[in-house]
Each structure stands twice: as structure tokens, then as C-alpha cells.
Length: 338
Ligand code: PBG
Image (cartoon, rainbow, N blue to C red; front, side, top):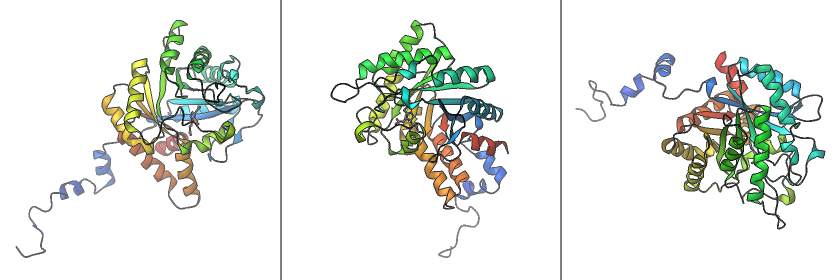
């Protein structure tokens, strides 16, 4: 056969793959990963003491909701088929204190929101709550501080138990502890069970990295960590994969019903390994910075933000996430319904 000619009869073996990429319908038929509205959990912010929803500059399309606008948005998401929301509270700044006591106030903003959402939507929408203290403490850390300024892990657990109980009482289907305190899942499970909340599930922020990608979120909830501090003492070092898997295994052993990896796109290896080694549902959180980067580049016309969002979510699912907490939930649900 002359040099440079291809074997016209057998072709290249890769032709087999190319044949199936030829038309949109063929590609749809053989797609290994699908992003569906059923995979999406929408994060929502609800603020105390505001009369109008307040847009969040660093999270375009999102706002701090009033109780009223929260219910409207939740109904919209529910009608689009989004199965779940996760609530974050923005308390009255005057209510912040050293221990974050507004977090376990039965009349606190998240607890009131749960009541209203349940009344409006019944069981049509899964109601998840972020369970942490950072929005409620005056120093912005996720737990109480020792005299040397470090977070006191064990005294914080007791406070998380109180928060879990008021959230369960107010109607949360799922509580999601995000503070990365050792033993938090076991402590919360124990408190819930002791008070009869055996049906309240726990989604553990199990592998939560100390990430630069939470910036827009901290703007959204007005959290400043005192003294230019950071969370590296309790959140995970992004350098460590094995440690993340250890965190996940320990949370499952402590009774987590589902575990989360966060941020998502920078930790696809951890998601994949978690999916391969655990049986519980694996969630991923496409965090505020991941959303903001895509949105900002889209606003400048540098990338197609809808395509980038779908591509990222596809990658997160392909890695093995069973569902994704994402600020794109509403937009994507609209896009998928169109
Ligand atoms: C802590 C919490 C944070 C996020 C979710 N829960 C912030 C943090 O750890 O500093 C970040 C979520 C995001 O960036 O979208 N309550």
C-alpha cells in the first residue's frame, strides 16, 4: 500500500467512535452523563429585617430574600421541577454575638422561613438547611472561640445540637452541617434521635476545603472573619486528597445520610473516589466563586455562560456526584424545560 494512504476498507478504529457523534440525536442516545433538573439543589438566602429583596452584587441573579420573596422563588423553583433548596440565614447584624445564639432561636429567620415554605409547598420541595454558626457569630467563625482565639471544637458541638433541634422542629427535611467540627455528625444525630427527630436526615459537608472560592458567599451573608482570619484551622487543605476521603468515611461512620464535597470543580478527583468507595449519595457544591467566575466571564462576553454552566455541571456529575448544590439551579431548570 502506498505510503500516506489510509486503509480504505477498515478505516481507523476511531471511526467507530466518530460515527456516533454525527448528529445531535445520536449524541443524545449515547450520552453517558445527563444533567437533569432532578440533580439540582438551589441555595437561597433569607434575611431578617429587610422589606425588599436585596440583590447580591457578586452573585448576579441572586438576592437576599424577604420571607415573602423567598416563598415566591421557592414556588417558582418547585414548579420548574427543582427537587430541593438549601437555606442560608442572614440575621439582623445586631443579633450577632460571640456564640451565634440567633442560630438556635426558634423564631430565627431560617426557622420562620421553614414554616412558611412548608405551609406553601407541603412535601413538594425538600427543605435543607445549612447548619453553622458563622452567619450568627460576631467574629465570623463557624464555632465558639477559646481564649487564645482558636475555635473550640467540643463546645461548638453542643451549639450545633441546639441548631439542629430548632431546624428539625421548624420542619427541615435535611440538616447540612457545614462547620467542619470533629464529631459534628455524631453529635447532631444523637441530639435529633434523642428528641424524636429520627426522620430528619443529615447531609454532611464532609470534605469541605478551605477555599478562595467562597468569597461571594461571604458577601451574600455579610460574614467577615475577625482579624483577617481564615478557616484553615478547621476546613481542609486543598492539597490533601487522602485526608478528604478520610473525612468522608468518618462522616459516613458517624451516621451521615449523604456526604458533600465542596467546592466541586476543583475537587473532581475526590468526588470520583468518594463515589467509588461509599454507598451513600454523594453531593457536590458548585460554590459561589465557581458561579461568579462563569457569570463574570459571561457578562464580559468572554465565554458563553450557559454552555459553561452546563459543561461544569456535566463534569461534576460525570465525576460521580449524585446531585449538585448550584446557584445555576433556577436558570438551568428553565433552560432544560425550554
Ligand atoms: C458556612 C458556609 C460557607 C459556604 C457554605 N456554608 C462559607 C464558608 O465556609 O466560609 C460557602 C458556599 C459558597 O461559597 O457558595 N456556613
